[in-house]
Image 1: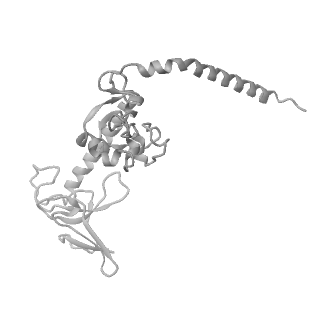
Image 2: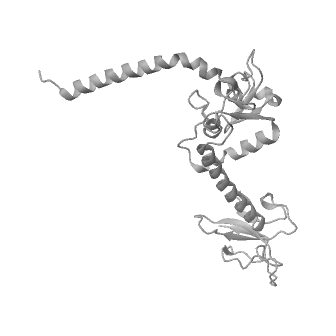
Image 3: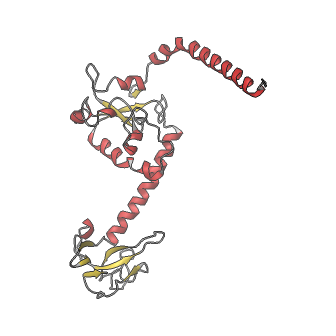
Length: 267
């Protein structure tokens, strides 16, 4: 029988590794209670102290954390207490689950590693909601805050990402004020129609506009927008022209539709 030197060496190394690891874990056990008993500064929580606010029988209250900030969600107890639709968020920071919808034990984590920037940007609405609706109680020591309450490098990274996403959203919102989306309808008898009103796209304004095809730079698809036809351009209010934004180079007329019509039928 051939003697497999490599396999034998690997087995020996694995045995010693497990032994050393086991010895290290055992040697640290006496210090675990000490580490857990270290008093936290006012307004700071660790995983153990936050878990005492999970809303279950005997708990100290009803708290949760998002990106390391702790909120008192007692006002929403019907959602966050045991049996509520969001009870799995109580007593912990499960930031990742707000994005992924994975509410398993492994999914309820504060680790956002591997998520796209677009996905992480989805946390902005949750952050705004908790900040507005629930009392802020402090910070969670760990991934996002140090024991002295300082931001970690990971939190600064996430905040920079959220800031970029907000800048993009602000630009899109401003663009919608300039070019509100058209109303649109389709049925089998009359086909597809787009039209403009002073509330189309959910943007209330003093003008209706006319439908145009808008192809923003850097975007792969065009969309229907309502374009103002009088006054100076939106982005140059001091101009002396009086055709609104009709001269914008990113606009095209719809074929077989009168340029001044507020409604166009599409093929």
